[in-house]
Image (cartoon, rainbow, N blue to C red; front, side, top):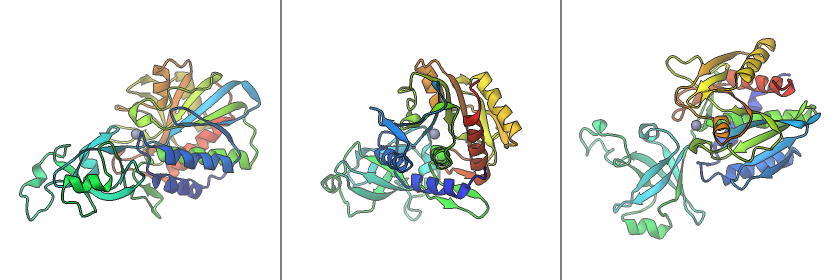
Length: 347
Ligand SMILES: [Zn+2]
């Protein structure tokens, strides 16, 4: 089956433009719900705000679950300064220098959105000497809101308050070279792949061997996205999340990364071998890898006590939790492996 990567990339584009930092993911979940409705896939919403779509298979006694998460990194207004600038608290695991200079949106409780820039307070080169040596941290970095704010009172009167969510501009670009660069490819690239797979199953009336759930989780970046609401008949649980690239890593931007172990320990050996066998059999480009500082929703599920066979695969994402990039080859290989996996027997 020819994979239409353009369709996957267009889903990525739509998804990354919907702000959804962990804790404020309703709009992204609503987007997923309307996608599922459009494709006539039944789904449930959990109290935690996630969506579980279900496609019934030939065997309804043993289930399979795949998950990807729509929540992303983000921030929250921590303090309103006397000069009208905002201090931030970060949501998720990343460093301040990776958001320096980023345009952002502040989402108020009343539903208003303000535009701003995240930067060092002492950015002006004509005023501050040696600012390059200052630490990028919660003390020095602020949001300059694009409004005529002169004081804390001005900000408060506009409706901005402590606890408001802040999202970062994705700066999405699709290039002729096949690269896709954008913030939040972790894990919206995988959500897009699952959307594509779900649509293919429906459009081509593909009969799956087992009832299969697709959990679109919304709290992965803070550690507890897919750790509950796992349907009781679930035997296998495959997290589809980004592969980590860097010095010493096997993962790249062109293959599907199959995770052998991350910070949470080894993934299920039998399932990992099964995934490797499927990749070999179907001529799918893959890399087996270990991620040093990483925990997936599959690990979160195991930690929460779920008795499942757990695995993790995903597209390779360069400069993760920062200036993310991947290639359509990686999207294609990941999609092909998921298709092969869905049609395969349980391990
Ligand atoms: Zn992440």
